Length: 160
Image (cartoon, rainbow, N blue to C red):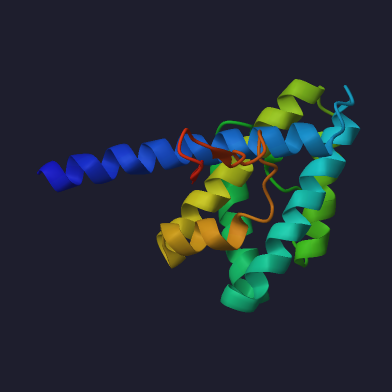
């Protein structure tokens, strides 16, 4: 039982860490612009980067299936996210998402995009595991602070 509680706590902590990374990256890439169109542009850029990193591992079809499932699940909280007529390829689905995000208010668009990406990452994690998901997706996220600098301690040995 202890192992199960630890795993659940770790998964929850990782889920929150990923959501925070998504929020920071979305805000950074939208350039702090107040409009939903900037959020929509940033979100689709992030999706394109995620797809490019994942395609060699799970294929175009794998990315597409997880993306479609994520849209379905996220549309339960944001019904306007549900795809309309764009039943074609991933490019059409992404263009439709961008259009739907762009007409919302910026805060709503950002929250929906964050939920959609977090859902995608949760599904991906169930497929390829947490470690591989984190390694593959780490180039996507903007980190909130630079890595700590090495500084010498009292006896001259560098510490972090």
